[in-house]
Image (cartoon, rainbow, N blue to C red; front, side, top):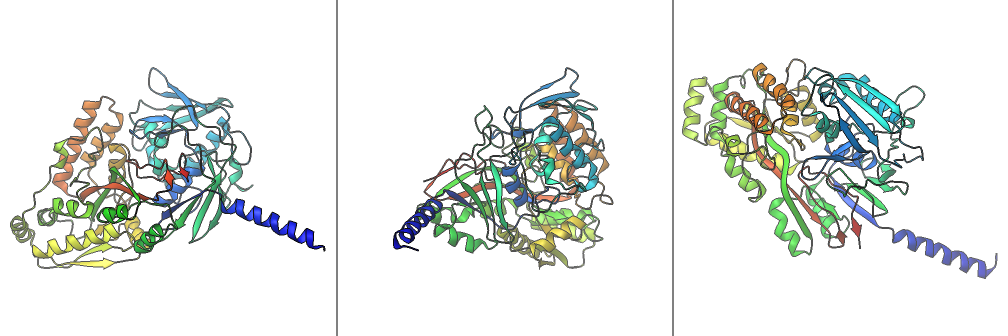
Length: 514
């Protein structure tokens, strides 16, 4: 082989290597691996990644209204029971197949067929009032949903981030109908490139993406990718994630600790904040023999200085809020802050009335989520000061989550990902505990009010229903809301176009890296 050929080959390789090195990759930290690509077995990280690959028919805008996503337009019949969607012109799956109404129906039927395994099945099967009766496909770009009654929540539930009711290519499933492991063929502006379990998930720009004509906002509108890749780097440890951010190894650090904002700014990083919709609560298991005593729950509520916890944990960015209606919601007013006041002496009196004799109350927590851990420490100290024998039970996050799913705890330091409508949050925490172990509040009267909230379309009337629900919750005390997490992200100086929003979901589209 001659020397000229070798030099030419080396130069070509160098040029190729240089081009690859210059590819714009947006590195985003997540604290745990995703649970799969089908969207049934889900958590917050899974939702975040998969919504880059797949698209729902409609999506929440940044102002929490509903906008176009895979559907470019829709109409509602006069009786409010027929929704007709038009699929976005040019919408294409990552394998080149056009997205059709038959694909929408295939996905819908597949979700419904999973029954209770689909997190959101109850929102559409009639058990909570709303029922999708038929899904029709009159032509390739038109899909029609017929529901049993007018609903204030139908579009919001289609856009529900946790539902993962997006449209995937039927070719994600094999001949047996089962989802092919690690396959993810969607129509989003990013497609799956590589998933190294426990390390990272790399998505690459999908050149065949046909954008919406509406401006990008939240999860709606134009979601065009401007970087070549979005790499979700799995870094469980908070300190290690900060070190990687400061070293320039990651570009976006979501859920950044409020107390660390000034340090980040001093290092030349941008810190973005906004009011959030993710509730941080203490969960109470009311079927526990000890915790079933409402006087004991009242004592615990009086023993906790909720306002102090909110101020300390969020650096003043968020205030105490025990309700299912966040300050960022249009429905919020001061009535939603009604709650037993901080009064340790009243707590001691109620403990005596409850017949409390110093029994241990275990607070389950974890160190994966620093906020959950620190909240549990603060609550334990406050309970101890009032004479309550509380102990921390520090678990691996996966073990704590399993206990939450099974309802196996007395108290838990917990966090709910953002629900963009108050009814969506109340629908998650309410239910029959014998059927749904994750239900925190089992109260038939409250349940009926929740159902009413999903059917009431007048704004003021709906707000009044939410107030009735909260008044009942302040009486029953099945869950102690602490505050809604402020959305805080630290971003590298080279990043342009990245923004935070109340839903607390990172979006890699529309972002440039210089």
